[in-house]
Amino acid sequence: AKQAGRNQYYAYTPNLKAMAERNLTIVNGLSTALANDEFTLYYQPQIDTHTNRILGLEALIRWKSPELGFVSPAQFIPIAEDTGMIKLIGDWVLNAAFKQTKQLVDEGYVDILVSVNLSAHQLREPLFAKRVAELLQQYKLTPRNICLEITESTAIFDLKKSLEICRALVELGISLSIDDFGTGFSSLSMLNRFPFKYIKIDRSLIQDIAMNINEAKVVQTIIELADRLGMRVIAEGVETEQQLSLLRNLGCHEVQGYLTGRPMPREQLMVFLEDYKK
Ligand code: C2E
Ligand code: CA
Ligand code: CA
Ligand code: CA
Image 1 (tube, rainbow, N blue to C red):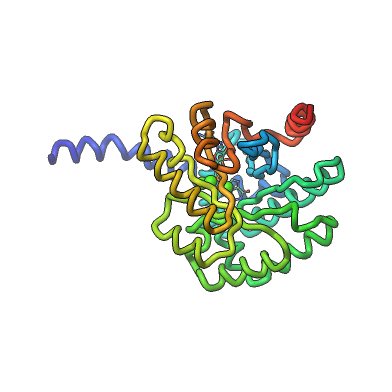
Image 2 (cartoon, rainbow, N blue to C red):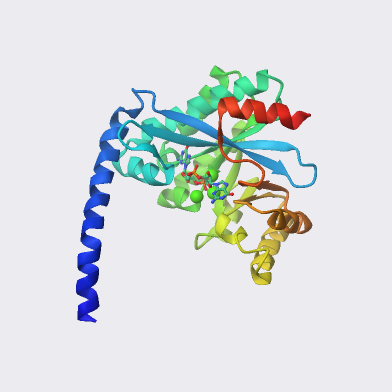
């Protein structure tokens, strides 16, 4: 055991060092990324499983760093949270998404619902709902076109304050999703307390539904629960036709995944939306 421990020590040390160096490069890079216009939003379609229509789009941030190339948000968002840089980045996302949603509405996609991911920081900001109201007004956008995605871990820092902010957002007419559903510990209690309209079932629960009957039963139960609560279900990470047809049979309302459309830049999205109409 001692031997294994030593091997591990030698095997992992260079890795940790490389990770620390990369994180430092990310921290430094993020501090100038906004000023240098290095962020963009990609959009991934959310499809009605029964009509095949596009009902919504999830906005996903992309960062192209001059040093590192494309860095995954799964990697840099947590770092931005830790360093406080998420404050400015989160506001940039919100502003860019609202602006582009208004453009989509003006181009005739009047019913499109654009979902924006919130960070934990935004759900602790007392003036956050006011900021959202301001942006709606600035872009002459109706709240019907905007959905905000919240994970359990986003809200968990201060449940009371998060709940207050969520209520204020719903008051404005914004809809809310619980994101990554099924990955936390007390998602069920969140469902009762927070005014969510959508449940987004995490990809990890969708992955094996076509191979594993028990996984399918879990998803079926979530859909039944959502139906009883008057909520809509979006399955995330749908990659195969088998998953899609199973989800359709289970009564899942919407799907989002590589099968029905990858996250894409705005220009590509416009072509995608046009083609879809035909
Ligand atoms: P998320 O909110 O759960 O977003 C879904 C992730 O799954 C996206 O990764 C998307 O590209 C990926 N995905 C979609 N369909 C499939 C599929 O069929 N298969 C697989 N394997 N993956 C799929 P992405 O864009 O890398 O984002 C990762 C995470 O970073 C997001 O997870 C979200 O937590 C965070 N994030 C992204 N954009 C933002 C943002 O603007 N603000 C904040 N606060 N967080 C963001
Ligand atoms: Ca999300
Ligand atoms: Ca998710
Ligand atoms: Ca996630």
